[in-house]
Image (cartoon, rainbow, N blue to C red; front, side):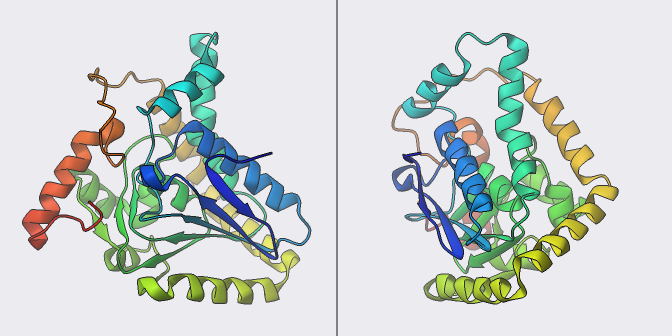
Length: 278
């Protein structure tokens, strides 16, 4: 499969790189479906022991792309002619079930995050086993789809950040347990690859059994049932009608452009300046 929106680099440590830098790696359906294909390819590759997901350009991912010409074409390609039921099922598979499948893949997966990791960016990072972030990483979760935030940062912190719609810095995200490690931007790739090499030394059988056991413990506490239940409700609820986005709209905004604008406003109020990503 020739990829348009990602870069796939096979190896003992396989690299999957989001490659829409001009859109801050906002996720159209092509990108998400290519991620799914690449992950499955890596799982079938006996040489691959660890997978690292990262983003090209200035950001890991600025969330879901729901307004661009590319995404409009994606919807036409995949959803035209589908009944309402089947269209909903397709949306649920892409935004919920696919992420759960990634979370359960039998090889360790690392999200290497820099810049924006917001909305849908949070979701794909949350589906990985570990998150290593640079000092400049900025995080915002959102409600719906693959909704794991109460598990990611705890119930009270999830309510606090979602009600206010504020950024979390990399250090704050590590404090609350979403991020594993934070490094200076210049050291992020080196340190992530160093860690991945150590994971390789543990062996594929050991890593698979550890991951399966820990995920099963989480599932016994209701993780997958909860996530599917919330996602199922969310994709069946019509969003508030909104005018079409102008073609010049910033890719960090899209469907949640009001939330992103609020987050920038609060960041300036709290720290005296907006995010350097803009």
